[in-house]
Length: 107
Image 1 (spheres, rainbow, N blue to C red):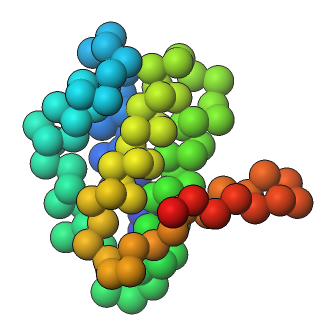
Image 2 (cartoon, rainbow, N blue to C red; image 1 turned 45 degrees about the horizontal axis):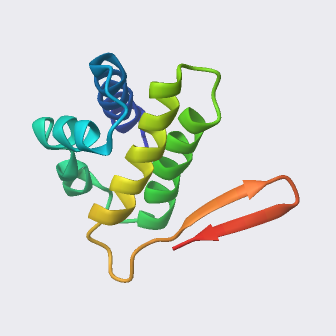
């Protein structure tokens, strides 16, 4: 499964948010809607959907733990939240964050 186009879309979304200068969720929502980003799930593969969504989650988490600007890291957090909240999967796929030996489950 080639996730490169999806990762590029996330890069573009977060970079545009970070350029906006406002750290508010309202700004992220504005950028999200302007890019019609919820349609990312329309292109999801029919097989391995769990792998697909967890890969998107992991990519956003990579932004959160990076040494990039605060706005870029915050954009990663907002993007992770938006991906979780807009996913069409029932039940929704949980976010798994591994911190060394411990794993945190977010729902």
